[in-house]
Length: 348
Image (tube, rainbow, N blue to C red; front, top):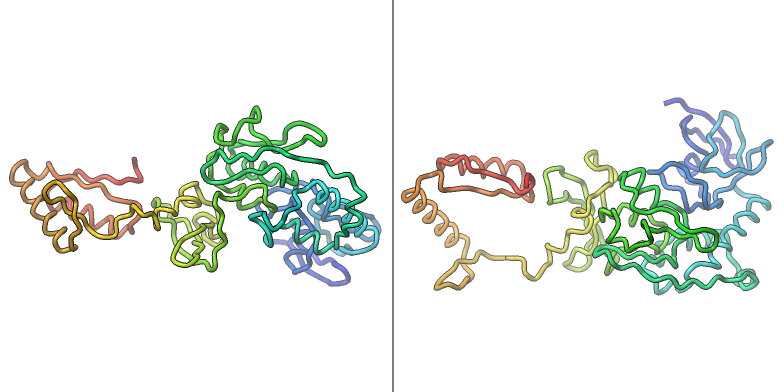
């Protein structure tokens, strides 16, 4: 890939020729405030917070400005700071203000921007706050939509369109009434949404958060157990429970993306109905048994069915939650018993 050399605040850096100024700055640890930019999506230029000054050309938004050989870029300055401050204040003054009650508290890009710019309460008080009391959309069993916290960055809209190709949501209405909406402003559960959660993980504020969100104390790298794709995941652990799951961006299989099962289907691990020991029916009632007792019973029933009805009376249904090697041994076991009736839950 071709490289170019440019200056960022008098620091000479090298960037890919196809990069934007914002990408080059972030790659070299130079923070430029931004809300609507995401590395997985095409540049949008909606928040106007990433403004910079190119020497000899003036101000521009860095998320759409390509790098060029020899250009000098200033990421700070009186005029830049003024534009950013006004843009940030207009966002914050119309934003939900109870940060301690927000699930994204301390993990919110708007908070980061406010802290970086240094928002003054006195200036905010001079601005007219718009009263917003839009209803929560908690119709989806996996996440909550709160339009009162939305900053209209459009990341969720572009994620749904560019990454998943679903287009379940879009900008709707006009002016101060603009918001992200489904077709006919119906609840998200009645839309084309596939509940993959890709928009949720990319939302920079608290407008999209998982249901019953709990922050993990640590994460464990693992593989999604639901199908044979083998998506890489990080499971969030709190105590002895799994409280979150996110895609592994370094995985060559899924590159950070997950389906609804991989992202939200981890509750079965700690579910109270999950079996933790074999059960054998005795006198019409299931009772706990050892593995030896259970396997002996299965062996006896297999032999009984073979002798009475023939080997084709046997059948096996395997699972995607075990390894390929275990599935191979399972089908080999069934075929050794004389039956070819083997199926797998991932095919159904």
